[in-house]
Image (tube, rainbow, N blue to C red; front, side, top):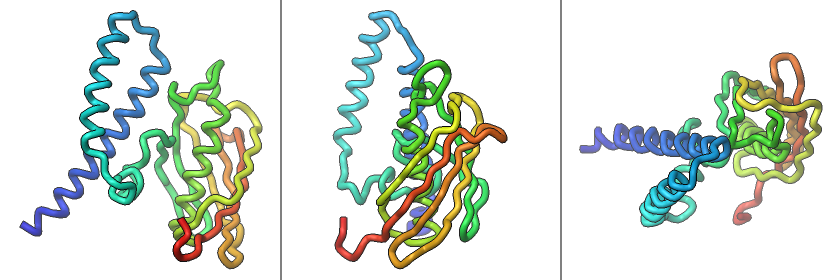
Length: 195
């Protein structure tokens, strides 16, 4: 019986990752669609039933897969997904792609989505390689050019220095060789008992 637990956990984790990705697809589809009223009403009924079913499985924050992130594939459904392709002690590279759910207009990503990506990815990097249990204290993003939707993009990050509880980190979002945005951030390791 014990030998089946890891397999069950792996399957549950994989199922949750698939659920989160399906929610992301739904968000993109809603943003890109102009359905007729009868389709809207039918989809609303189906989503209301699905929401009620999921609400029946609500658990405390620490038990939620989106909070625990048991694997890199399991993330919060409203975050921008990425795949870390390279990582060492001070440098990280990741691949990402924005969808219609992130569109601001004229084929460009909404400006508010880019700090969300940086905050999540830089925070995970600090958690992995510098100081676990850190929170964002400062995040500055400079926009250099539009970030396109539905194109493969690259994120580069570096840990510049660690001073006591502080970790200073930078990031760049690239479309090929073109820099779309740059970020500088400060993460501070929480003291015991801090939320």
